[in-house]
Image (cartoon, rainbow, N blue to C red; front, top):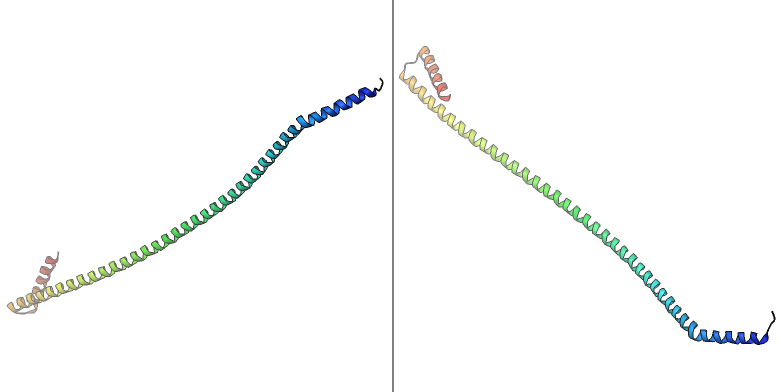
Length: 162
């Protein structure tokens, strides 16, 4: 193998011409397309990072909203519990007042009935006294007849109350 300078120069010139043609018509548009692709991928990565950041922010907002809702629900339950306790106390107080009033009414009614019974008993005693006196007046009083009269009257009164 021998070194031929002519062939070498033609090969070099052909290579340079081919390189210039490729650089102008092939490498330029190819590198342009690749640069556009790189820019597109870079913008998609930025959009994905921005979407991720928005998702993280949205998640934090949702956590905060959930915590607020929990606090509100706890507050509502606590208010309901307090209202229930207050209402229970009012009902108990009202029931105690009503029971006390009913007790007073019953005591007053008992006292009234007792007074009526005493008045009726006094009336009966006075009637009995009048009847005894009238029977005594009709009969002459001797101890034996007086005892008999009282016994008869007690039997008569005992028979009426049965």
